[in-house]
Length: 401
Image 1: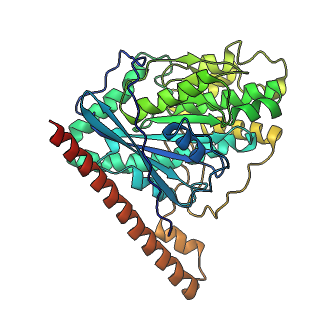
Image 2 (image 1 turned 120 degrees about the vertical axis):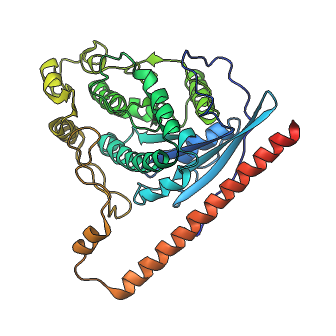
């Protein structure tokens, strides 16, 4: 917590190729956005951020692990208007999920996006990592929507209407519950995934990724830290540019069990995921996830049943083993969903923590309280720096008029 967030900038040109029939409402567009990267330790978040900010620079060594939180920014000038994207990286395995609140505030919620990075080279962690991340994002989204509803319910309704456009008239619209904040999944280390995982198992993992992405109304893209595929590199950089600077993303549905995966939100369906010939070409029943009969039972109009999540989790464990333990204690967070949008056990309350610790240690508790106070000061300091950067950018825009 004592480390100071790094700050770097990148000048990015416009991406004229990006187009969509869905236009972002003018009340939502601003000259400042917030992008928050979350994911397991060593999944490649720092490398992905730097490959976007400094695409021509080749790193000679792996970046140091991010402690707590890291901050970068990117700037772009379009039609004489300067825009800034605040890019946050939450380090570790989300053992301190409240750090997400630094990058997603009540003031910038309408222009925030979360990018969940998963490590495909560790298939045993894919499902648990995704659910842990989505739970943390859902918690902060629920908190921010409550705050926004109290001060500007019209903006909240407009934001929700905009986010729902991608699923208008969708066949699964009654079964999915998209979050109130845009989310994109980056399936990283695809090159290692191809080399180390059997084809049938690769298909199953991609089904899992697509399923979770579709359930929560997210988009998904596969990338590699080290890739000679210029198409994948350009697609990733274009995606980040669009997310950072509120450029509409055109609908894309590109799937391949052995090459590139890129699906924007609203373009997939449960039928395509589980019954499409490309996804179920294996005759090995061991890696088959859900049949059409299973889909009718487990994917209901009320959401995804608890039995569905349990079955998928058990299936992954039976093939790849138990997920790796978190690098931190993970105290205060749990995964266990009943129906979609409901958390069986989430962030623990103070009373629950007290009940879990009937034998307090005064010296240890005092140190923890001190560290919590340091974290609060750190959060406040980072937020002040972000506000100063936004004001500086606004002043620069006004001076140029």
